[in-house]
Amino acid sequence: MEMDPYLQPALPLDNHIARAIWSIAYTLFFRFSPRPLHRWRVILLKLFGATIGNNCHIYPKAQIFFPWNLICEDVVAIADNAIIYNPSPIHLNSHCIISQEAYLCGATHDYNQKEFPFIAKSITIEKYAWICARAIVKPGIVVGEGTVLGMGSIATKNLEPWHVYAGVPAKIIKKRVNHGST
Image (cartoon, rainbow, N blue to C red; front, side):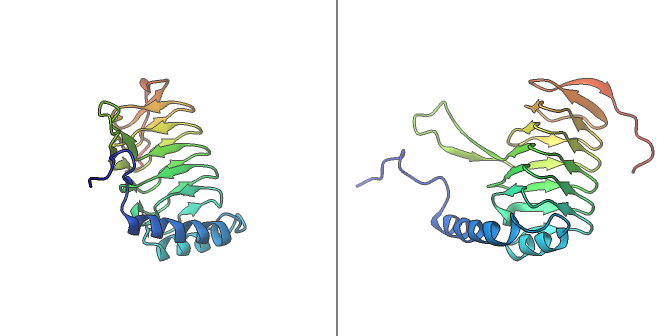
């Protein structure tokens, strides 16, 4: 007997088990840890498979769904209430900022098929980029080096380097000046 596609899980069982264990660790040791203990949270994320560089500030109320799919280079900040939904890898390059309540959404469903199959796509935030508060980055997007995605904006396509984007969908509003950061 073939299983009903509506009832099939989007992710394999071992992934569900790992997520359950991470959820317990997140609740007990991450979410309620004191704000200044960034190194503690980095250690926890690394224990669950994250790749994290030096001097990263990950705040206690940041939600990271799949730490084993998180890659942070040096000097990355992930603020409180930022949501990193990463069933596929999310790569945060050096000196990038993910602000409060920003949402990096690494998966969706194909609504053109009756089974709504799960589709996971990687997200890359290049160095010196800033995802402002409540901004959303859709699956498969690359945010270019030095780019700012303005507050409440939605990135629906790749964002060019060294520009400021705003709106729904996000559009270029101006060029950002590079003051020798590279």
